[in-house]
Image (cartoon, rainbow, N blue to C red; front, top):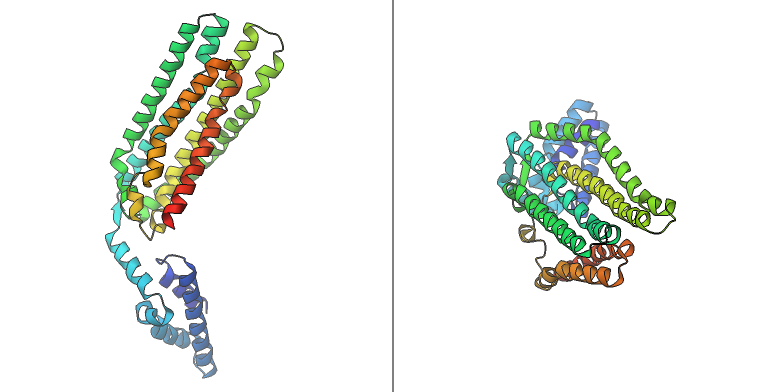
Length: 320
């Protein structure tokens, strides 16, 4: 029976593991098991029984109508024919581009978090508000530049989202080994990143005096959080690059909307086009009016959470 089980697994290997397919797989196994038991009772040897079962039930396309999965088999076969094979050279270039892009994105996010350090240092410590404002906008400008550069790094690999792709055996082994080697580094970087975020309040807790030392402690809060987020974001993005390649073959049903922009819903696209500029304006206005830089940074994670909620709500309504 072990041979029959292995053969059955091979038959269904390239099909999507939906409830319908799993039900058909279970039904076919029951049919094969019953036939095998019947042949053994008739005095057939194990090899003869297995051979007869495979010859009778071994062609999935002949049984597709009875199992109710003919449409799935046809779709899967067409997708396999149309899949683009990602070459070994493309795999290496993608992983390198994704690594650089991850560091650029993480740096941009870190700069956005750390941008209040300029006003705190120049405005509160050196008593020069003008330089503080200039420093803030310069940091934001550099952050935007990094966001743009990170996006441009992956322009050559849009086909991974726009086409059904697959890896050959050599490419898959290379990615698996690369991911395995990165696992220990990922764990260390993630742990340090979380630790820095947790310890961000430590400088403010230690310094109880008012004046320049307190302002520097507040600045260190942003630096700690920025460094922690840099490690968390960069390590997760690099890890995702390996998972993206290894999961290419699991994308058995290619959705046309995946080829479009992230905000394919028209209402969501209109909202998001003005969302982050509005959040930036609110952040700067509230920060300068209240001068509570140690607390106004919370606007950013709250805004990110709201953006995720908006995307989920509009995407859900679009699919219904």
